Image (cartoon, rainbow, N blue to C red; front, side, top):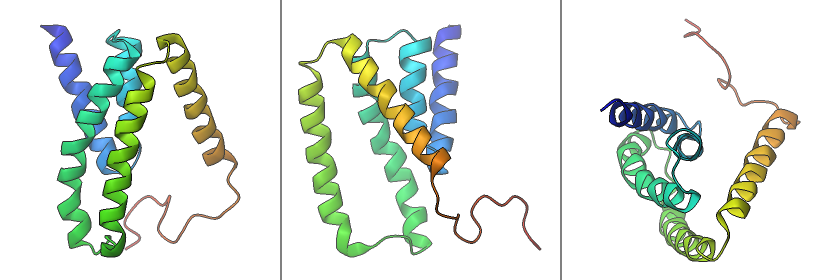
Length: 132
C-alpha cells in the first residue's frame, strides 16, 4: 500500500513541477528508475503517457495568458509525436544499461548548460516575492 501512495505522491509532485516548467518528466524518470526500480524502457513509456495529461492541463493556462504561437503549434505537435514515436521505437533496440547511461549524460548536459549559460535571465525570472 505504501508503494502505491509514494508513486501517487511522486506523480503529483512531478506534475506540479512540470506545470512550472521545471522538468517534472525528467524527475519522474529518475523516480521510476531509481526508487520504483522500473526498467528504463518501462519508465520512458510511462513518462510519455504521463506527459499527455500534464500538457493538456497546462494548455488552457498558456492559451489564456497568450503564450501560444498558433503558427507553430501544429508543426511542433507533429514533430513531437514523430520524435517520440521514433525514439521510443529506437530505444527498444538498446540495452537498458546503455539507455540509462545515455539518459544520465543527457541530464548532465542539460544541467551543465543551465549552470554555465552566459545570458542574463529575462525580467521577472529568478525573482522571489511579488515586487509590490
